[in-house]
Image (tube, rainbow, N blue to C red; front, side):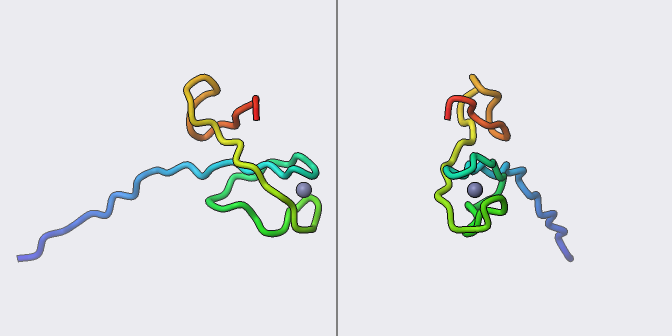
Length: 64
Ligand SMILES: [Zn+2]
C-alpha cells in the first residue's frame, strides 16, 4: 500500500528590497549582493508591505 503524499508548496511572496543608492527595487528572498543597477555592493532595505494598508504581502510599502 502506497500513500501518495502531495507536496503542497505554500505560496510565499518574496520581500522587496530597495537599493539605498539608486532606489531600484528587487523582489527576492534575499537582497542581492551586487545591485544590478549600480553594479556594486549597495545597502538594501526591506520595503515590502506587511500591513493591509499598502496592499499586504506582495506589495511595496510606499512609505519606506
Ligand atoms: Zn543600486
